[in-house]
Image (cartoon, rainbow, N blue to C red; front, side, top):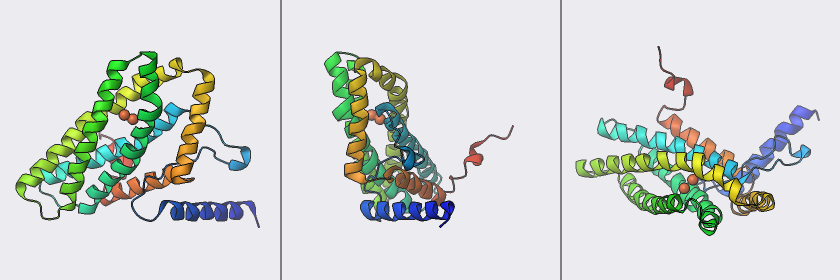
Length: 236
Ligand SMILES: [Fe+2]
Ligand SMILES: [Fe+2]
């Protein structure tokens, strides 16, 4: 069998296995990033901040989906209702129940113990809680296909609030918290945390989960016609 063909079949098997592990439903938050281009060459470790930043990319893409849905609601334009529900489910399973738990269990306590950036950590923690409350409401309202005008207004406000809070939230983590993290832990701890993150991901979601989530987000973008990246380039 030639190399290309074998590689194609192996990739197919990996995807099939991952789909079985993760289920066909809305990603119960599948996560493991493919850390290596070629596993035969050995896996390349992803550091804890790099791991979390990749997950922020998923969050950012859903914030754009939320904003698109919000504008459609305001303009009274129809859009696939399940797109919003499924986006909120990704926020729940992948961001709140996985990504934020990693931050809460492994990142924030180390800053508190080191007495560094504690005010920031406190705000971030509170925002996680508020975000979960907003998601409860978004899930409830988005599932209702016959929303009243008032409920639509409420839903649009919730989407706006979520976006307004999480854009600066993730940006602050990326630019302040995560860069400082390397300085408050030893190299050994940093490396072993990277391994622990990977182990947690593997345990919960199996391999290739991150790609499955990203593909799911891409499908949601396509359903709103916002997948094509070039549409965002201004024509000067
Ligand atoms: Fe966070
Ligand atoms: Fe985060």
